[in-house]
Image (cartoon, rainbow over all chains, first blue to last red; front, side, top):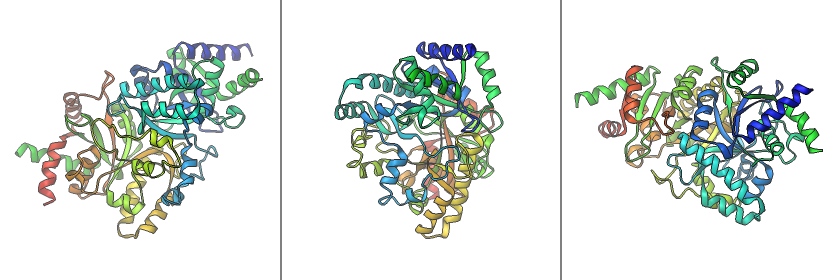
Length: 236
Length: 236
């Protein structure tokens, strides 16, 4: 129990200080460990670390509150909404995701000051400015927030946004919900940047090897169930 | 001139043999070099090479013919078509891409036999099966091709498809057009897999360093203008 609190506290402090933390979801879900950092601290160096040591998809995470203000849809909802006009979306309907009932993907964006959008400089700029925007729209009404969003960003782009479910860990226990819950507990801007860690065998890096990586780099390693437990206490 | 033909011929033979080739677009466009392989030969090892030595976005490329059969839209067209219903898309309109007038992005897919969709095994499966589907739909009418597509793939997913413009290098000289033109000249299934090569300085790897990489690994290195020239002769 003492060990558990120490883990969560270190991870919260690390997030607040702009360090990476590692989050493994669960054996019964993806079974993947993500390298995660608060987007407000994202630098070209962080993107490089994610692509070199992670190797998966480099993505942004946001809360449902923020997504509502920005009018960001879940892609799956948007696709089912327009599939009369685009019948290919009916054929491609994601009704067989092996580890969850719903994908958390929303739009892919680039900051308008990026060039191609894919370099470390460009992706970190998109991430950092998204965190800044998240902070700025805190007290704005929806229409104005969406306008500000469009003034700064374009879509299609190279950085996918994943949106956490509204009740977070009460309804879904994916990386997006785990990360946004950690950021709420850390009381920092709820915008996270993450990347799955791949192994050398074609699969995701095993939990044990991800722990080794965390130890070697002095990073906190959390499992989803630890975050769920801490969240239950915190959100009461 | 002899050197130029040798370059193109080596690259065509390498594509036919399932090897990577490197394509630099142009100083006046993205100024990026992509690692490219014919998707029919994509293996978990190829994805690993792309994420480790490339580091950019790992994507699929297809021809407009195939996209038409599959009813694959350009995202930018789809977004402008549905932006009354999703006003955020009006705000995010990509009217300021620095190096081109139009993005070639279409949907992001996963093969239905993948698990998370992001591992090397999963992404290579998605790529390889897309090439197989491309071959299969050659003589099919549109409706049936889209059904076959949906039987095998879902969207949203982790592998973006970029669609070449109809007249290829006559209208656009992006990596997608350069690659699909090369595959037509090589007379292989026109489905390509690629990834931009990043440098250690936050930017795309410079042309000179990309050439060094090609030399070290015995890979063909082509510039966009060489492909355009070869294409002009070939397509006459």
